[in-house]
Length: 202
Image 1 (cartoon, rainbow, N blue to C red):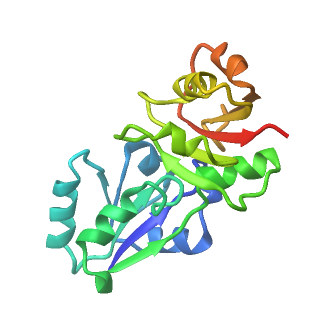
Image 2 (image 1 turned 90 degrees about the horizontal axis):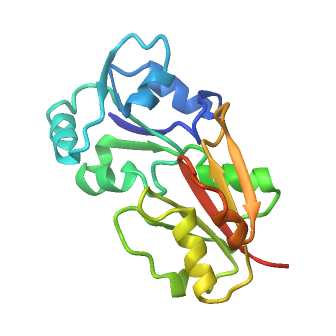
Image 3 (image 1 turned 90 degrees about the vertical axis):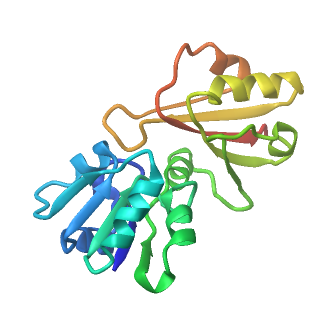
């Protein structure tokens, strides 16, 4: 069986009990370096996830007889590896265990409900900001190219009144949550690994 397990927003304490149980009963653990380091005392084989997902897929298909867990930050079904693997592996061999996403985590920290939220990402694509910013409540998974500063500039271009929340290194010791208007966020020189929430001003 191939398990795809969400570790939660970062800190291992946020993983589900089922996810933890499946990880420690696996023969092989595949994941990013930081994620693998968070799983201590694992007795099986650890494999660092390659950026070439085809190679990972080929390895998994050749080892379907083994108990493999692929671990990922957050929830693997929200802009994660879950989509790619579920599109390429027979579902009878697949088990996805959701984790707490960085999106869920940031909303709980700012005490805002997630009802009617629009979820999107800037990973590897050019976002349609006219469409995104037409929503009252947005959460965007960002990357190095399109992050908080770019989002704020797009908001200013349209003269919109929005509140922006930037959550960095969520659940880790160096977590930082910054809340402000576009011009205030633009004053912050640099943001580390983050998600961005965009809300209509009340």
